[in-house]
Image (cartoon, rainbow over all chains, first blue to last red; front, side, top):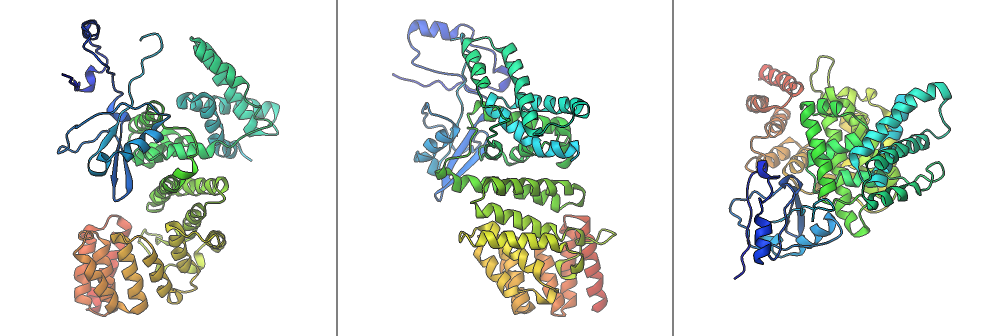
Length: 109
Length: 395
């Protein structure tokens, strides 16, 4: 079975680290990938309604909507990320939040 | 030219170039600041250089270079710094980076208030304290807003560039919207007129940098045509004066001519847009010799070309009412009353005005009172009080 763990918490714990959890799970060979996300203040949400691209600064806050999937992309910049997100059909009925992935300083990983 | 003039003229260019060279917004601002401080110290002693802008850019670039060299640890960073030194000498080659700065500050992935603040700080060179005062927030709040915006640009990967051609149709309006909002912030408030001045200055720059964009010229024309009437909008004791009653001899006719010329040149390109249309409406008002000479049928037709938001629809109803008579106007306004404008103070104010023109004073009084209860500014309230008195006496 494959599972996605969605790690939620308020920002006061942003720099807490994983206390050896990552190393242990890597050893057990159960981790297929993962990353820390940059804070929600750096998020951009994308919606397309009536063929119009609607951008919002910040995370999505629609309580009726639930996370239904995720895609990790690697592209040139936020403009390209927005273009890619806007092409996804979910942008037309739901919301796609673009969150930059935390890039650790060189030498850490 | 005073030092203040040089600062206002060169700040944006120095910061814009430094951001391109270093990719670091905070560092760019700091080094620009240091370059101006150095100029203030040296120019009185050594004389003002031939090209003050190039001198400032070179000085700021050298500061940035020194800082990066001190900070550079990894070899990648050192290569970056080395590459920087091979930049062509700005004395000979100064590419204008201000347009890319403008587009980046106005990126739609930033909140509107952040776009406005960032534009004022990095392009116009206003201090954080000045911007905070202009938007009536504490300096710490404004400082956080600016820092957050710069962090988002850096970490979320907002590119520092003029968008490619296929993105321009949606991105240019985003820049125009920021400048127009800035203008309106200053225009709607007599205390913050300096914001309108900054908006006009930035719009001029945009026209210079995008000479083929008629909407940029349209926006500048629109600003000038409004600004020419600035001093006649309020009486000495702060009562709003409507367009009809403004002293047209006190309008700035040089500015009006400049606005009309700019608009004509833009319209000749045959690509009209909302700013050119709004400027054309403003031009109809500004070029009418008396209020009675106003070409209301033309104004009504122009409003018809704009996207019909509730406020535009109300303005169009006013124009049609002025062209075809207050009874027609009243019917159109009543049609709008059920819509999203319910509660908007200009709706009863407009209705009251048509009723007054029809001589239906008691009903007009009721609507003036309702508008008065909802009015946003003191100037409007004083105007509405005067009207209310007038129709109460008339009745």
